[in-house]
Image 1 (spheres, rainbow, N blue to C red):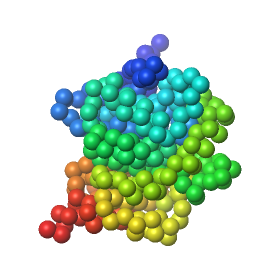
Image 2: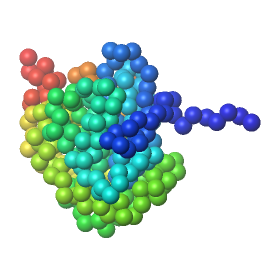
Image 3: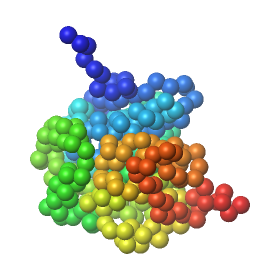
Image 4: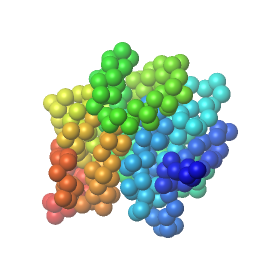
Length: 288
């Protein structure tokens, strides 16, 4: 028999957070490596984030936890977690790892969790990367969100079905209704505009969970501070899974305040800069 192929090149580990067993994946890096923590979306585990996380693990101390109640992590007893609770859980996870500060990369529901984390623990976040943010008015009511997810399913790689289905089944219908209510009640846009750390927002042109280009530009115009918005042409919602090379490339550039350009030698996906706040670090460099 052939040995079982590891599910990830990252090490698979467990820790305890507020009495709850938390499963996570971690890279092995030098002690001075910058930390990036990846936060998953609604009903899912961190497994679908691995294609991007693994590409960044050579340079960054990479962590991919399953938040409490998701994936292989245990559920808190008699507690329906909301966005602030998940942000607190992320902070407590970092406490368990003895990590004082991190950059955060989130997809879908992971984005409002990051925004809340930045509001509660501003001294603990270096940079924020929000990939396909979800939870706004465009995703309400639940039947609309379900329809959007169904359309998105046909636009994602077939392998995504095999990754996502076990996570959704494990999460369960009751948890889905409770978490959706908590997600849609969270003031994501207001909190986003209040962010005080360098922030990269990555959107896909084929994402049915996001509003149209006109609304995105209208929202972007409200921010002149730290937000950089980049669009991946042809990508849908689960960009971390479907376009890992392009996303990892953009994240590396953002982390080093370098200009956002296409992946060298790759014609697969155009990377388009849609908006740059006047006070973004790279914008300030261009002015000087």
